[in-house]
Image (cartoon, rainbow, N blue to C red):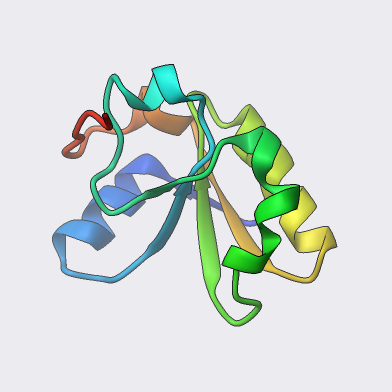
Length: 102
């Protein structure tokens, strides 16, 4: 079972000042349209070669467009000993602030 969080819960936590480890796994052209300012962008296909950027003590919230890719990345991270939570509904259901990534 993959842990989940909604976009609304993420927005509320960020607005209350909580520090979250957000990883946006969408493609470059998707994040160019807007991403959560606090998120780090690591394209899904590059996650395996970027595992050294992850810490096993940190719980990462994984984000994509609709929640499918982020669920797959969350499963991969968990299978490799990391803590991950899937943001269900992805950016399609996120109502908080976003900024374009250049």
